[in-house]
Amino acid sequence: MNKEEKMAAAAHRRQYFRVTPEPGAPVRVDINGDGFIEVIKAVDISEGGIRITVPHRFEGCHVDQPVSLIITLPQPVNKQFCLEGKIKHVRNDSFGVLFTKLDDKSLAFIRSYVGQWYKKRTVWETLQDLLGIKR
Image (cartoon, rainbow, N blue to C red; front, side, top):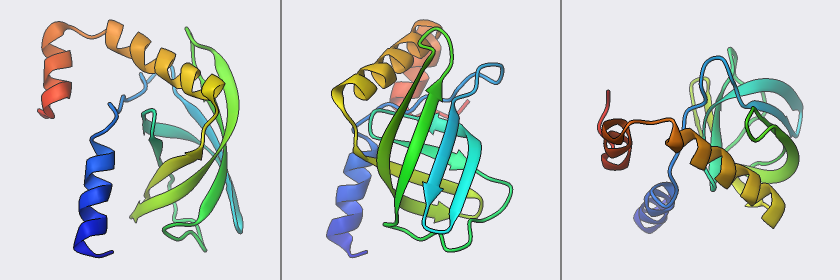
């Protein structure tokens, strides 16, 4: 990836707020790619993508590889939907997936989930999230 592509990728990452699912209410992800299929939990999710962790590396999993996803959002949204994505980074057991085909209905589900997540946060927690301050 050249310098311009890295800058564009960094700008995209900052475009959406990422939220971390609550431990007792995980976001389930069924991911299917060329040569692998897994059912796992999301580390974080935004309108633009999702990050997942698996206890092992996917064999044959490569950056820019297309994947199919079934995402199940917990209460209060409680919705399941399918979409397409592309693996954007692979770091040890962590995978970042950029959503490439996200219909309006699925986007609305994710927006609702992110909005509900932020409603549970204190003002200080929200400010820390917006400023990228680690807790």
